[in-house]
Length: 371
Image 1: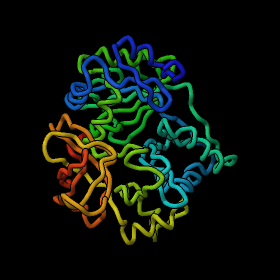
Image 2 (image 1 turned 90 degrees about the vertical axis):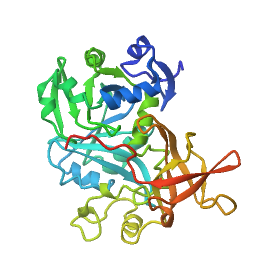
Image 3 (image 1 turned 30 degrees about the vertical axis):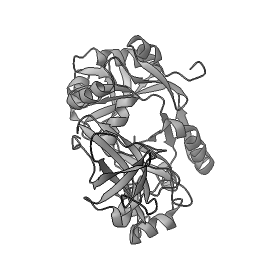
Image 4 (image 1 turned 135 degrees about the vertical axis):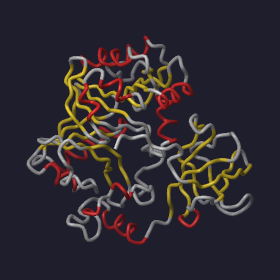
């Protein structure tokens, strides 16, 4: 653990009794004294505070910053309204996904947040393809917090009432506990909430101010994973990767019509030919929700078959575990498109024995965003 990077909140995590583990090159809290199950349920019922400072924060500037980013990302960035945020992803020349991300129009710049494990490669990718006409500026002097759960609005608006006026995917600059924060009403749990970029020097004081509220508990990586799994959200490197296209992953909603065939800014991004062809004709496989029979979870890597005996492998579970909110095991994986309809039975093989799973719609628990 000694050679791992620390976020500005590291000492606070330790003081709160966190179990620290290596994650994407950082020492990160996997759980606190409550434990993963109670942390998960507390976030669904009230509000949880997550340290996501390991993720990459980047400012993109230039007269044509939005158009420049559209050459790498198959999303309508030029049409994004000021102070609004959108989900997107970098694509490869073969149509795979090299990372997923959030991007916000802040008027004079685009603010991009990328995954921790990919941030160095993402920044290098943007610099190599967009500079010098577009400037890529990594942000290293700000932490990133996520406040998630149905009580998040009440908690944050106690520090600044303007937080309550924000809707899902709005972004704003708010003063919180005396610090200038870049706030988005978003998150990756399926719950209402906020992501807060705060100067490093103010991060601990803000986190403590939020934790001082009776409704807020610190939440670790374990519950963060089970929350996003119940919400049917992809984890990069597991449910999506360079071998998976956005169409296969069920992310076509993130590719707006203006970037599709016949749109005003059709294509023009890496892998456009493959992705647009799949949009037109369909993909051979799809990401689906899966509910195992019984109480035992089926986790990442479990092979999937279309029959209880014999045959060949048809797919793989990419995420799986126990869903505390749904009180049972849930999973996601890829199956052939002809087996992707809700209600279809497939079989996961564990220790040489095949057990049935039912294909189901996602999310496993309803989203609770403020529209």
